[in-house]
Amino acid sequence: EFSILANELYETASFRLKLGLKDVRLALAAADSVGVAMPTTSILRDQHLAAVARGYGDLEWAALAKLAADMAGEL
Image (cartoon, rainbow, N blue to C red):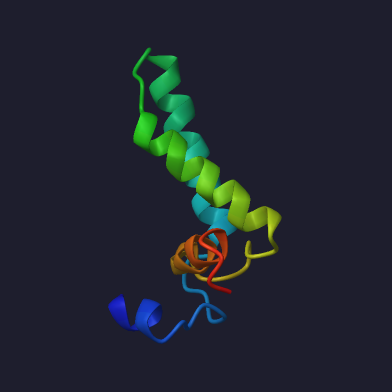
C-alpha cells in the first residue's frame, strides 16, 4: 500500500522481507527447472538479499524502498 511507503511504516510487517526472499527463490527455482530465464526476478532476489543482510528481514517487504534510499546514500 502506498501509505506504507509514504509514511515509512516498515516495522509492522504484514509480509516480511525474509518471506518475500523465500518466495522469490521458489519462483526462480521453478523457472530454472523448466529452463526459463527470469532476469527481473533475479534482480528482485538480489535486492531482497541485500535488505536481509542489512537487518531488514523482519520488516515489511515495502522496506525495499528503504534499501533503495540506503543504496542511494540518502540515509
